[in-house]
Amino acid sequence: MKTIYDVQKLLLQYGTLIYSGNRIADLEMMEEELREIYDSKLLDVRDYKLGVLVVRQAIEIEKDKKRGNV
Image 1 (cartoon, rainbow, N blue to C red):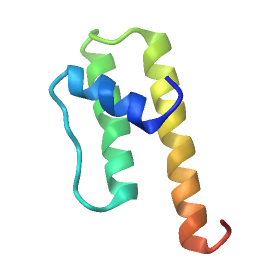
Image 2 (image 1 turned 180 degrees about the horizontal axis):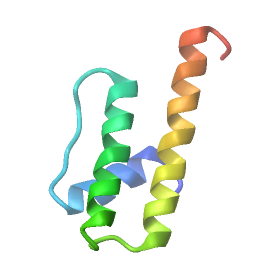
Image 3 (image 1 turned 135 degrees about the vertical axis):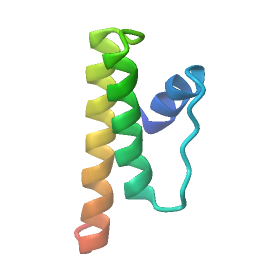
Image 4 (image 1 turned 90 degrees about the vertical axis):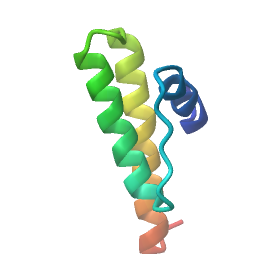
């Protein structure tokens, strides 16, 4: 998993589609969904960690954009 699109495809495999119009909130919700799927023992640790890493990086990028750093 390298992109948010990859995370979205993974979540869609479990019937989860996230879109609220608020990018940061969407990303945070994706992280929570990954955690719930992992806690349910449906996702292996590697995919969970990679997914969370990708999402957290995207959150930081979005926060930097809001601050005007990008």
